Length: 257
Ligand code: CAA
Image 1 (spheres, rainbow, N blue to C red):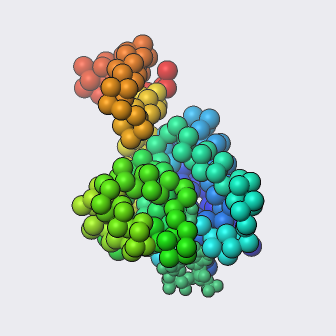
Image 2 (tube, protein in one colour):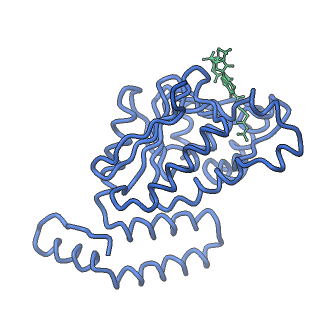
């Protein structure tokens, strides 16, 4: 059996993770979710990784939790489910994740895309939370992250009807930042990841954390965190290098110090 997650790189600072269960539309088995969490844990401490691109194939980014596996788990099985740990590990990854979404991002697949910092989608992609049709509801952040991403009305419509939205709607609602022709989605996501990976690593890390605060905390707390993070960066060598490079009209050489 082929491995459910293909790991490429890092190349030019970018690690690529490709979901590889095409026969099941990249449905997220626990094994696959664990593989993503473990790959990210390794990338977190690898200085050669500045950003991660997460992608699937042309037909599906991921069609959600693996329904066949889920059917075998009862309430106690759910309570002891290791998946929550894997989701938390993905959420805690300190470096930027850029999702390149082709095809379906449904249920846990849409939730996985929303764990990314930036989503680039093919113009043919579809996003949805169809769990309600299975007699359940989103369980990996769908109700919380989707409301923050697209607002209460559209999120409620998606979660309560189970109907998916197309990429144009996702762009208009702010769920994704760009849409591309399907054959260019991965290329565009990779280019963005390379640009991110070329920046000062400490600044990127703190900026990611500050951006996440915007969805997690009240404005005053978020602004306080931003001010502290901004101040801390004033003590880094990379800040001196960035300013020196600006004066010298050359590209900065950041060291992560
Ligand atoms: N789990 C397990 N298998 C899945 C799957 C899933 N989520 N999605 C698709 N598959 C399998 C199908 O069973 C099928 O397998 P067989 O060939 O063995 O029958 C194969 O993938 C291809 O699927 P389709 O023939 O249906 O492909 P399609 O292109 O016609 O349709 C689709 C694609 C619209 C994604 C459709 O497969 C679908 O609706 N899938 C289910 C989506 C869904 O309900 N996701 C939510 C899961 S629950 C969840 O995500 C909860 C959570 O995380 C907390």
